[in-house]
Image (cartoon, rainbow, N blue to C red; front, side, top):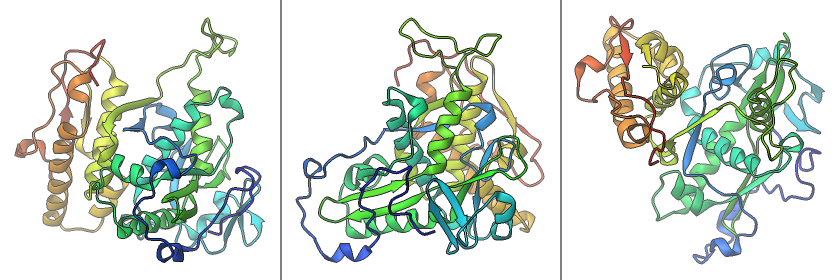
Length: 366
């Protein structure tokens, strides 16, 4: 997808350098954050959408609100003045359908896209007038971004190149926003803007994420019977919970992306249940995890069982090591990675997982 160098929805005049030869121009080691200029804050938690209407907005699970879609080719696409174009004409999801694919989804780093969601959400939460928030080019200081997403403190050029490679691959992902229409609005999930070797910064924009964040914000406003917003004493809108912040951002570095999918699905389930005891069938977990579900297609029972074991055993490990569930829920019981009874097989997909606890802590130490 070609990046529009001066889209009206993006900060005017922001450099959109996509020349990766910049890596060879400057190898100075003292590119500190103080010299990086205005950079976005990197949150230490990975936000997970718990608003039920939009809970699949950052997944490939097709639904009536919003979801992601991978394209086989994005070379014919352009994004100008807030509109996605195919061969220079505005495009809907129906017209783009010929490019939809499931091939190659294992190469797409959806965890990275979720981290970017967190950065944009942080930026959005800082604005005084959410209704006026627009897509902007966001710049991050790469060493800080890498550290918060679990990379080694010894950041190399290869690390940076790998991140940029993953961002460019995300250029093949679009977001479909249904809004009750058959055609569906289509927006780029990520526009890679460039790497500045002098400042060691990476820039990007996401029209889709920006739109989803605003839609979730509006959907979460508490309203009276006449649909008027309920306001706090300070004039701000009263809000229903829309996100969970119980996953450490460093989970992004995990290579087992199927396990990360499971963690996000389970944390959302537990948070949505509140003080009730959450439970879910193994089959349903798999359905909510597109990477895992896709990897099982066409496999023999033995291969399916091996895939399920690797994904679920690692997921149960990450639930304990990379989440704050134990601090947020009193005496919560999480599955043990070494317990074979907690690992589903192709013949036991109707078994139910439960996550019993004694209620959500009032003042969790998280």
